[in-house]
Amino acid sequence: MRDKSLINKVAVVSGGGSGIGRASALLLAKHGAKVCFLDRSPDEAEKVIAEIKEQGGEAMVAETDVSNEEMVRKGIQAAADAWGRVDIVFANAGINGTWAPIEELSVEDWETTMDINLKGTFMTVKYAVLHLKKNGGSVIITSSINGNRTFSNFGSSAYSTSKAGQVAFMKMAALELAQFKIRVNAISPGAIETNIDENTNITDSVDKIEIPMKFPKGSQPLAQGSGSPEQVADLVLFLASDASSHITGTNIYIDGVESLLR
Ligand code: NAD
Image 1: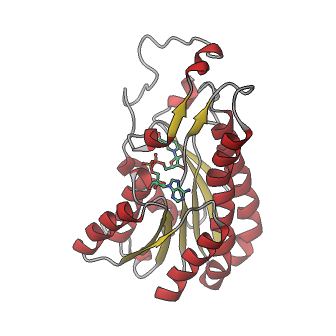
Image 2 (image 1 turned 45 degrees about the horizontal axis):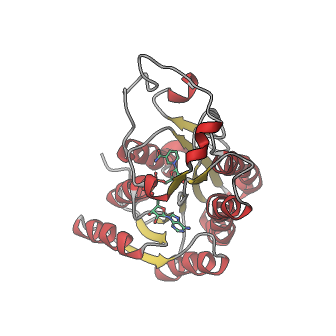
């Protein structure tokens, strides 16, 4: 059934060209939201836009590297200029970045991960607030089980720190923005079948710091495998819609209980 609370709402989705962002953008559009993609790969976003238009929806892309302040500001402004409002912000773009032992992880690699995952989230929310304040709205931030409930992906200290930082930022923002009827929540997926491996550089020397763990029956008790982007999109739709009108300041795990095991 269509969620009527999204009809004619404007959603800004970062990283909507692939994976979780793509599935969420398609679902938000299916329920009537107009979607502005902030993605550094506009060609990928254009393919999703074509799908949205085929199903009768409206969408546009603003080529944006979320670690670039001016691009983020302009991208969100482009959505507001096109449709006169911004109601939903899905701050989702992210990379796994470089996974390496701490003494070998370069400051540059640390900064790249922080700039995209954490600073990018901050800037996406920062430049949306002005618009969200007008009618209230919903912000959803894609964090991860890593850095929140799981610390066993050895070498992912930068990634996990960025994902933990997003949840702290979400809680600060939820309190600060509640007076404007802006809700702010995070989602923390476990392993989801996406293209994130393309933005993952696991160095060979991670072997040196790994602590062996054995799960003879597998490490994903519910599904015995990764979740799908579409399953995460259902959660994003819920948090974007009025069905979650009393939920803010919350981090929701979507991992088939994987993170409680490891
Ligand atoms: P994905 O690689 O399939 O999609 C990521 C999207 O973000 C792509 O469209 C890419 O172009 C875009 N992107 C990357 N860097 C960008 C930048 N600097 N500026 C603008 N766009 C950029 O990956 P995904 O798995 O769908 O990842 C989405 C989010 O989910 C990320 O924040 C990731 O950390 C998080 N996450 C993923 C998993 C998983 O297992 N896939 C688990 C937990 C959390």
